[in-house]
Image 1 (cartoon, rainbow, N blue to C red):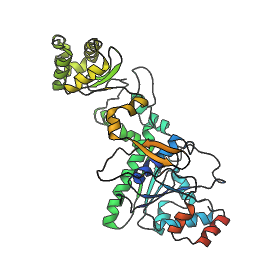
Image 2: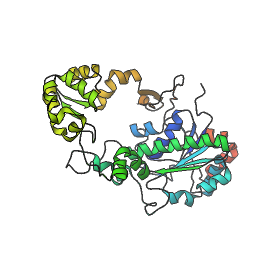
Image 3: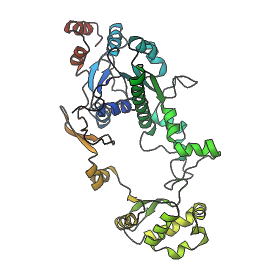
Length: 391
């Protein structure tokens, strides 16, 4: 089957998480991704991408082929630029000055191939006072505002449980690359697409950010409550907790009828949406008192039947045991030559008629000879590159 991006060649220079997340979006749709790593003698540590055969590395680098290339060596850099002439996309997440120091910035790549698209991810942007600072997800979470609104009121800043800045930056960069590919079909020319952990984190703050930019309001921690919609939050039942998310008068009417709160709902503090927003504690207390009278499973069933969004709070074992998650087949089986049969998380976007690729993460340099031959390198040239320690 021809996959949507099977005609696109991607040279992947990325490491850790944000860059690999970007490239994984392309690889999952069939792009011919070449993961380029330094030879073992140049890169002696495992870096911050985790152990190669661990869950993290296997998840973010699937559906690629792997080669080694020493970009600090003249012959290795020349080989890379030769590959650029036949590529569509290059993705990197070095600090901004590194690519220019290596001689692989956008101007150098475009001189070899005007159609090339360079996707760049940095910590804080390609220029500006912080451009050369090292970037890390947790730093961006703090600087972009996420930690200030995460956690219980008065608790102090709290890190989100997933690397939101890394993941969102990878997604935003992939969207930019796809937009540049569409534009190139019209103009015949490539683009430099770049974003950063800080830019993406601020963008991900979304309505919390525009509460400040438009209204001058500094959002605060709201814990398990929604910052603006009442009632939305976490509630205890007879045997556990549930999430309940509802807003507006119609949803409130359904909650009142399902929980039998008609008498309590007549109180002025609960009578209108504006009143409920101003009296969150009283609203929550009324719901909490009634929800303790039955089990989580029963309330989830009853409230959903009434059209009120309600659900459990699952740990990861419960997530993958959930019947809807199982139906959606979010676990993607892959056969790995060393690890055997493993399961990663599939791309959440479905395109009926398109079966996702299932190529395991490559070993370092596993496909070097095969890939270089495809790019026109002769056996003699490959041997010479090895002798020059460029591979």
